[in-house]
Amino acid sequence: MGKHPNTLKTLSAIALEHATAGQPDLASMARELGRVVHQDGAALAVRLAALRTRQRGLERWLLAERSMPSISVLVMAWPPNHLTPVHDHAGLWGLEMTLHGALEVQSYARDPVSGDLRMRGRDWLGPGDGTWFEGDQNHAHRCRNLSRYDTALTLHVYGGDLARYFAYEQAEPAGRWIAQPQRSAIAGRLHR
Image (cartoon, rainbow, N blue to C red):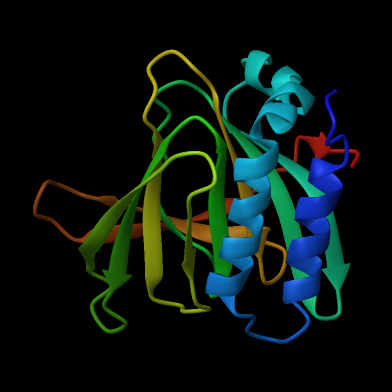
């Protein structure tokens, strides 16, 4: 497994250490997590190779969790060219970082009165790159694996358990956005 067999444990420890307050310094957390991913990327790719070959669709794997203050750390496997619907995070803060592959993240602002969504920006993330969002009820985004052939892997750190959220779809190209309640499922627990 290489000289860094505890990379997942290190990533979990960094996330848990930074999330001791209600609203952690997400930029600082991203810098530390990114440093580990850049340094131990090859070992991490070997450690998580089984997730890249499963071919069972988008999967969420629990890496760590804590209840006080609430935090969950997950690894997600993104099938080739997978695109999520625009979705929120139920008001939780969050950080998302690419471990393997490349991801596009489109950010949206939701108008609290009308519910309309307006695209605010787009990020492209390679291994060790991250993006984050504060605990905002009006934040939403859409993510896409940029590869047509390879499964991407990402690390997600949330200020709680993202069990329920809303996905948004437009009734027609210029129509109103419709919010659909969703439940997230965990494929299993990763052993650190």
